[in-house]
Image (cartoon, rainbow, N blue to C red; front, side, top):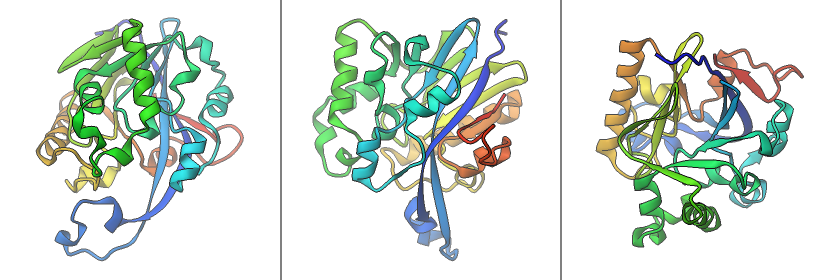
Length: 264
């Protein structure tokens, strides 16, 4: 058990109206009526032991505009609203290399990056340019991570690793080849930041895979892992894109919590 009890914040910076039939893989197979749905966009902050750690860095606002996403607040401005400047961030855990998780890495030139080895291998390999994969990543972001690795600023992870006291990463795949989830020890108990291993509460609760995937079997296995962490360790599970995350943890749009909510 870690002696550090991290504060965990979810920072919301964007949104996308959608439909259930667009968000879930083969939604018609469930024989349910279609309906309105939405994705919110988050990154996460861990503070403890004198360190400030980011989990992902959000999308670049220009990339978001090009892709039709609504940027509620620029991620770097959102970070400033919770009292954090880029120079104060020591470590960035990159859960995977999709564009909405890597868009502002260049603003943290001194931070060390924690990246799944399989993820970097895939996105710098031959299949990354295939049309079913390529739209999900920004080549400039991938190139930045590759350069950072050459500079010695990247820790490549695989399997289950404790990267810092009280912070564990687990590579699960599924949504993206090297998708990883983060298990954080907070003062209130374990918190599982699923990132895009689980986009929505309903996805996990109803066992309904998300539409964007690399490997269906691994996606299901990730759900099983998250369920096990929830049951065996009493962990708080935080999906990566559910608007309910903000609401369940006290967000109401007021000045006090317009951008971020405290998970633990």
